[in-house]
Image 1 (cartoon, rainbow, N blue to C red):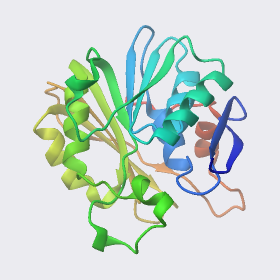
Image 2 (image 1 turned 90 degrees about the vertical axis):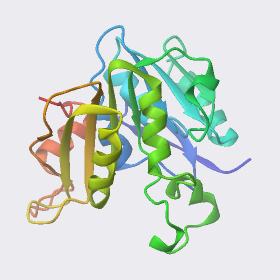
Image 3 (image 1 turned 90 degrees about the horizontal axis):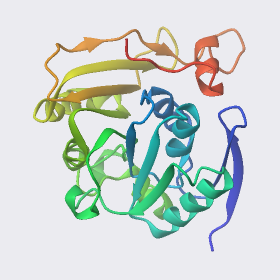
Image 4 (image 1 turned 45 degrees about the horizontal axis):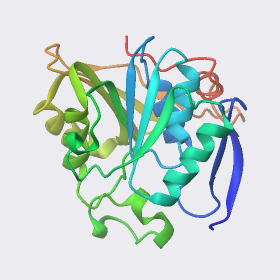
Length: 246
């Protein structure tokens, strides 16, 4: 069995066992969980949930919603199940084995009210120095971004939301792919510093939505005052604030 660590996220409200080596949930996962705006009674899908970093934080943030994670890696799936039990969320959080490269209908699940993902950020092995073998599945999308967005679009009902976090330099591709399936797109840039270019974007779309594209105020993660995060970012990471879409 691979070595694991137990970490506390969301200001200690979530206990997360994850691999000591390999993909570990970090800032991107925390931001995606904060961007989940599912209301009471909503059903939410997390595609490629890994050990459950996004899944569990979103579930704690949204206690009236239920969540299902889909993961193809059996070791990550086992950790996710362990983490669900560890946090006492068995009643409204579950995970199933599945691959986004296959049809959503093959999972035997009803369409969801919302779907979210923190997908692998690269689909071109020449775009970066090869990751360590234990990190490859988390960094390299074997089937490309189009497959992930196609899976999410099939996973939600009409009027359902699709939310993802990705590299800012893939924004044009994301919007183009989403436009084939959804509308009412909103983009929130994520800047490391106020004067720096955005490195990440959070994108949300509504299946069959018709509203025009919106660029929302950016989130700035760090300042130069000596603190690790800006006050806004710190409040979001602690679970004291959410990343809303209005």
